[in-house]
Image (cartoon, rainbow, N blue to C red; front, side):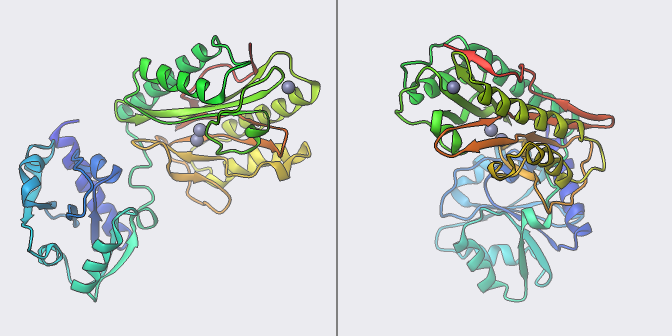
Length: 366
Ligand code: ZN
Ligand code: ZN
Ligand code: ZN
């Protein structure tokens, strides 16, 4: 990413804000800031904020002591630096560079104290969450970003191929989770965000992480893992079985696999996000397990592992080529076991393309 790439992103974001009826954007440290200008300062109580207004030079409000770092960041030369010193009012510094009316999009994770400071200083201005105001800001990936997501997906796939060879029976979930984390790093991840190992009844809890439960012969085991490689996310789920599965376990797994496939085949430009969810849910419902599919079908992925757009009932956003998101239906039988299958998929002009490509059949482990 060059300075020009970041300048283009900031310019586009400013225009998109105007198109969305916003006076501008206020972006505090986090994934949006890193994506827009490549600057990743420490998150502290001292206010740092990027101000984007349509067709105006971006302004970075920055604590004076961090200004040298900000200037050296990839797009440092493309932004006006508005430094403020301890004892000065940073909100007044911001107010001098914002229109005193209209509505601004502000980072979802901006600290309440900063928003309250702004509201006090500019009482006529209103605010909306950046995700609500501009849900498409980072949703459509360019070719370079899709390539990075595909590389992260390949590393996750290699991790899955390797985990099939480790012993499961007689080891704790947390041991297998540690193996997953080590393998993700060995395959190039710089950050591991989650390593879910849900064995037996724990698999019926979709966000169970990993416990000291000892995995037994006959257990279904949900493996859901991912993180960041070269700044872009991976997130994949496969469900394996220790030894030979029962007929019922096979059946439930087949239903989830069929739902995942149907939802994948529904991916095409113009389809609403909720359509992807509906297609997956329809398959599971028709098989009689509708009440056991207890979460949305997917989420976007990019410089974070969970972000808009969401594949959920009520989300009318149309799919656009370049969007990248998970398709991850599941069935969770309380007290017994769970099954989930998850791939990252990108929407292309002609349909979906999977960025995870390990077999979706039930893996058999020892
Ligand atoms: Zn079993
Ligand atoms: Zn996942
Ligand atoms: Zn996911």
